[in-house]
Length: 439
Image (cartoon, rainbow, N blue to C red; front, side, top):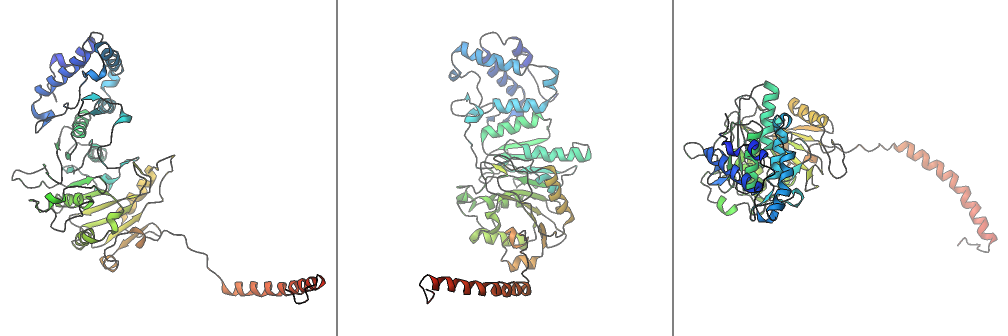
């Protein structure tokens, strides 16, 4: 009922003919037929989900070689009850199949895929959904959604907590092949209530309401590219949505471009936001410092959570989660230093459920914890010139042992008393050796 499936495009039909020549051509024809039969469900502004895939490329070899490659593919994804009832396994298979070269339209091995974005990927379950507390009826947006995993975790949080699928997922992704992955991920995981747009969020935001204005959401969460160069500063100078009224981020660092976009899409009153950022966002000056000051003075920043280093694939630098709220109950900012809370791995560190639970509980209790968390007042932030560097607020260093001066003085007297007889003995030895003056 979710899709129109033409008979010739069913997996069963392709599976029955898997030993016949022309597997690649039949798969491509099946994908095209599914796409045409489902209107705009698998298309967006002329871009199709299957556009970057071809199982019939000459780069797979001549016809016999293609069949040698593709026949085992059918066997490994045979329509058994177990495989069909496991959407996660199907999604994983589709993800592998969609790692393609967009220019040559040939299948490429996963290890050979060039990273198209500088976004680091965490070797942990992103905990942003826990801080934003998704609830039934929420509209949830990720403006840099990648393959959509963070959006689906937010939806899953609602279902696990309340037992109902009453929410809507929205996202935008700049890279076409990744947008395709996000669309298929949503369908294969049963997330039909979604709208994933293809395009550059900063240069051309596409999640708009009926009047052409930016849509507003109850939850906005993202793991955007770290310090993206050439993010669109020239276009931002004339932004028709007025997203950069607090200041224009530097041309070579787009961190605050994403933050400002996300803040502008928060629903007044209920909007909550969680974003993963590099630590430079916390303390860099110039235009970023002015933007940071305005966000704090407007009482939008709710919490700063420091994460461990080596938590993300592709970079060893530590990161932080910034939590914003459209409406707060006080003017304080909670700092949490979770940089030492991790399980060490061979090349990457990992946040265990216990580590995440400690952070989440501390965030909810919103109280200072020695060497771990500090609830800072607006006055403290102003005294620190709006610098959010976590060690300024949370002192995690071990205390030095106190020096007892009377004990040191007594020990010194004892050493001096023992040293004088040794001096006399040394002088007598020197005289015997012919050095009467002790030199």
